[in-house]
Image 1 (cartoon, rainbow, N blue to C red):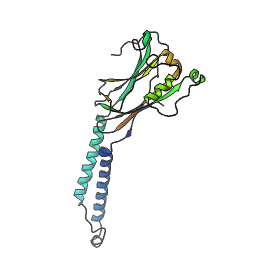
Image 2: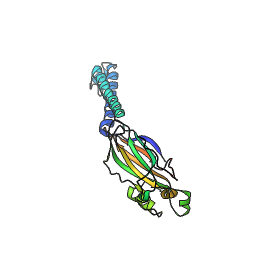
Image 3: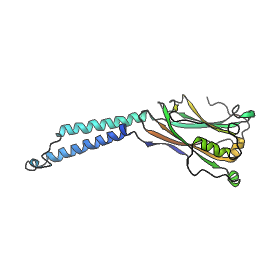
Image 4: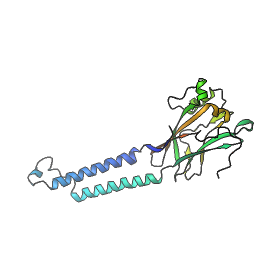
Length: 231
């Protein structure tokens, strides 16, 4: 279920249009080369009597559109977000001084990434399933995921919390800002095996990137003391 970051949609204006223009330029070059090698008699008849571009202009068109496509690809790599996440045991988050496992998302890329969509997938422990819990069968919203977890006799903001992240929320680049995803107490982790979050972000050129993370991967399910700050 967990996945590495990948591009699921590229901007039509800045990606597909350039590919189409490169294709058109290549076709024009092919037509011009083929027409140039025909006999004079054939070039007086349709469709070969139609001269679109001379060879020099067609080559220039291919080089120009190809260069633009390569420049776009290079710029897309430069502004590409680098979505990562981490978790640790913290104090002073759950009520009654209980310890909790907290998970945060960060963007290590150079540019800001904008949240486009989030989805949640819940899987329960064997004990939870034996008690009647049913794993998710499709991606759900944050309110639906919260309600599903709460149905296991768990109380939001006392035993667990999933942060509501709205569309358009910015994640600063270069790791300067961290996006809080959620926290879980030992009681909640006895019921929950995995909590997957599907995060989709838009970069500066309009490409959509997706990363699926497991908030409970590597979690300390019986914490005895908080972890030290990583920074």
